[in-house]
Length: 109
Image 1: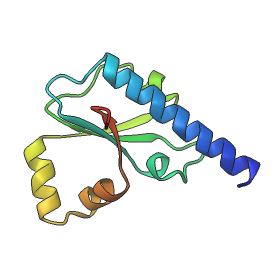
Image 2: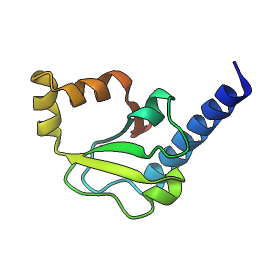
Image 3: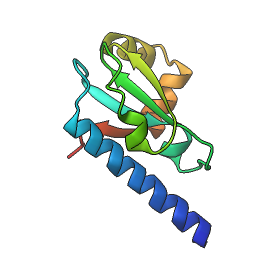
């Protein structure tokens, strides 16, 4: 693995750890899950990439998420029923998130 790839992998792991810690300390009200998806989840991000999050619940999280991520954050808020329907309908974005997403909260065992 090249030094650049090692650095990117370490940055990805650090960002995931910070986001998990943030959501454990400040769980989103009424949410059942928080999933990181997109380039940061896949590991093919760059310095300009944002962190894409899916919140399964009714509300946006508190404003500290960008500080925890250390980069801009794009948040989708979907009710659990919409998530289930999107998966059942083979919605392309839902499929991508299901395949490549990283569960941030609750923290997987």
